[in-house]
Amino acid sequence: MNEPIVARHWLAFVAPKAAPAVATSTVLILGRIWNANGAEHSVGNAALMVVLAAGAATAGAFASAGLAGDPVIAGAAFATSGALALAGVAGYSDGASLPLLLWAVATAVAYGLAARYWRTDRRDTVAHERHMTAQHTEYAHVERVEALRAGAQIESARAGAAYAEQLATALITRATLPGFDPAQLTRAGLPELPATERKSP
Figure 1 (cartoon, rainbow, N blue to C red):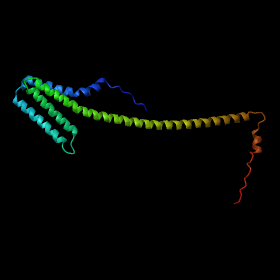
Figure 2 (figure 1 turned 180 degrees about the vertical axis):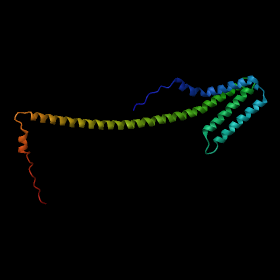
Figure 3 (figure 1 turned 135 degrees about the horizontal axis):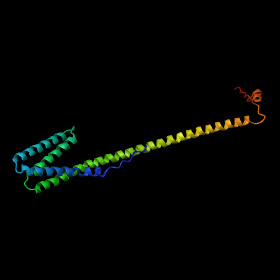
């Protein structure tokens, strides 16, 4: 059965690739807005961001520890810790050079981590496509064999129907011949097959 071909929009290809840069840029912009609204040289705000970032990092460490660690939760916790640290530096620093440096480092790290998941997802997608191609090939062969078998049965049924039609036509034609008397054939009876003698052992 043919599957419908769905053309993906170009945004579906661009959005995952731009997500790490958009995320780090958003954190940097919010940190600088926070800096312009009084966070610069605020010890309380800096201490709050340090505590939150450390707490998120600790949660990520606990989530990744042990055999039952969840990599999704750990990744989310570490990403939150990095975002809080970047926002704290961007909000507390008086210049833009350090926040921009940290933004570049955070963006590079985000793309490095995302590339790993993209490769894994790509491998899984390729393996799934190969498996589906093999399944389609196998089932297509079975469908072709069944189609040939059904075609042979249809042709056999057509041949039987044609033979029956020809036999009926011959009987009707014979009945219309002059001098044909079916009652005489009935009285004469059909010729008997010669009896075969069985030899005694």
